[in-house]
Every structure is written in structure tokens, then in C-alpha cells.
Image (tube, rainbow, N blue to C red; front, side, top):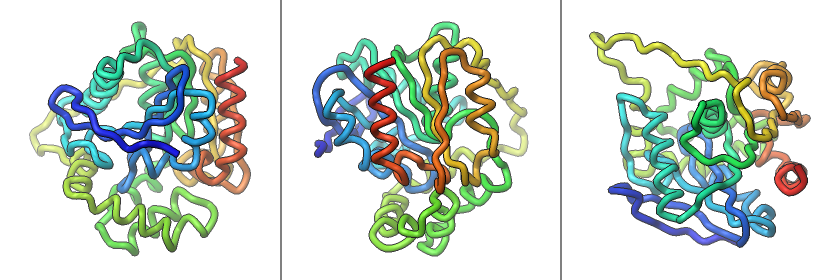
Length: 268
């Protein structure tokens, strides 16, 4: 279905999944504990690769990519890594798909005056916009126990089948990769003498590329009007909310999502 590969991006040993031929499509995964390219996109790559050359990389600090963290500007560090990955792979322009944190990062890039990434089209799943801080707080307290991973999966999935058995084991094992917990937890560390950084809120009205927004009607991390508000702020955008779904529409409703994504990417 897809090949698991490694490439040196600067001094960062980078793991990615690759499949298909044609125009490039780059997939950026979510940022919860145990997040990775495979855990985010294993149910989408095969369908997408029938029409696109798909690259799904593990971001810095996640999956099987080197476990590094930049305290000065972690988002810029990850985006620079993605940009350099594209240069190494000789990709001049690509459509992008991002889940959760990955989607929010890509929306922020698309809103830049001169985007650091050459985005042709963009699909986001539960990314961008405000987040329920109380629910998000549950994600940040992961203690590397299987019981707590069940709690994490209950937060991001609607159907019980994603919260136990083989899928639970896989997510749990991914969270135990050496350095994974430390890299994901580093974002919470703050020196008592550190100055509060000004939070930059992207101006989504500046986005010039077509955007498809997908969300779940039962998402505990996003507010009920998430997609509606995001769509109203982004020109040339459309939205789709999935029933009986929380934070991962591309997994819980993979077949319907894949059809929708391909229609958007191929015909708009």
C-alpha cells in the first residue's frame, strides 16, 4: 500500500511514507501523544495514491523521525523541516492535508503574506480556530499508561472500536518510542523567568488557496460552530461536518472522507 522510508533533511533523520504517482500531496499528522504519519493516514493513503504522489512524513519529534524540539519557535522549526523535506524531494508545489495541529499549522502558513510552503490546495481536519482548553488539558497530562491512552482515544474518537484492542495497542506503542513523550511534553515546559510571548492569531481572510474544512459533530476539542466560523473567515472555502464523529473524520469515516477529498483536489 505504501513504503516506509527515511531521508536526511539537513541533520534530521526523517521518516516518511510514500505511495502513488502524479502531482504531490503532502500529509501532515496530528500532535497528540502517539501521533505519527501512519497513525493519522493509514486509512487514506491507498485511495489518495491512486491519483496523487503521496508523502506522509513524521514531523520532528514524532513517529520515527529524530526527537528534537525548538523552544524558541517550535512551529517554525517544524515548518522549516517540512520546507526542507520538500527541497530534498524536489517538490516545487504540492497540495496539503493536515489533521488537528497539522491542519492548524498549514492554515497559519496559508495566511502568511508570503507562505513558507508552496500550497496549491489545502484540506484541514479539525485544525485551526479556537480549542476547548479544558478538553485539551486532558491530552497534555498523558502519563504513558495504557489506561490513560484509552482516555486520550475516547477524547478524539466517537466509535468504541478505536479505543481498545489492536488500535489501542498500536497508538500506545507509538507513544512509547524513545524520546516521543519528551518531545511532545517539551511544549509545556516554561521557565519561571521566561517572558510571555505574544500570541499570533492568523488572519485567515488572507488565505488565497482553495480550502476544504472537515470536522466531527461530536468533537470534544472543538466547539459546535467550529467549521461554520472557520469557513466564514476563509475566502474560497467549503466545509463538511461528519455525523457520529469526533476529532478524526478521516479515520472514523475514511471511505466518505477519501471520496470528498479526491473530489475537492481533482475538480476544484
